[in-house]
Image 1: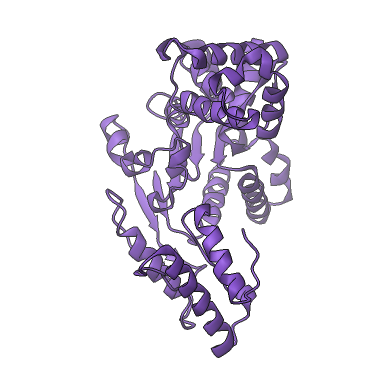
Image 2 (image 1 turned 30 degrees about the vertical axis):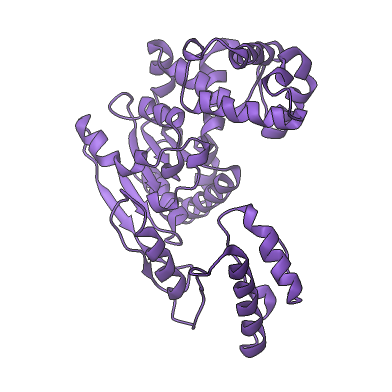
Length: 365
């Protein structure tokens, strides 16, 4: 099943409804897995599920929800490895900050500076991590890397992780995919899984997509539900492939899986003016799924101004500052109710300078 959920359409509510409906039908909690993109999203979804389950099934439902996995993909992968691959039983996960600290501490051993001799250490660490993300997100094997300094550092990096018995987020997914490619591990890990729900599906990368394929039909036993919106894909710079959601129906139909599609297009969060502007931008996205976000809230006057058509960027910044001051003076709009969205941080200096000239208070994001 594919659910296309526009911004503000109540996606979390729909996912929680799906999970509780399965529980009402008698599906065991341990047969259901729901992937979220962040720990924060997981916490919110867990609470929605708990509230709905207790309301529908009574207070005893709360006792069984601990067997339900709702969390990040890498968290699920780590649990899978510790359960089904003996060598990982004593490993510990590393978060992003812990990994950076470890790389800093082991810089000499790894030879990080040799990758970027002219750069500062933390920049060299960042560059290495970005390159490593590509390798892991794309499931590129060490054998396919060119024989150079980067490959040498990667080999030493994985040796270091094994020595300390730790795993990064990316490594957890790569190793879980590799383990699931083995028939015995696949059979054991998927034996009880019957329902897999993937939230923010538009942002999954190739490694995560392969994991989903291995867990769900036809390779696995689980019915798959993906929820997302190709218009909201924001992590392509980090390896996500929006074509996963765009081509979902066709790919799974070719595999013999019947795919139902539902759309949640009513935005209950934003004012009509914002929805209109968002639809206009979305229509310029090439090869997107055809759809039109619908408004729900009443019209409340101008809400969005698009700053385009100025001679240069500096003139544009001054025009933005002038507009804000007019909104504040003529329409009595408090500064705190005005936000400026920019494409990149490189636009910050000129806009901040223009706001300072006009005496407009600002809190950079």
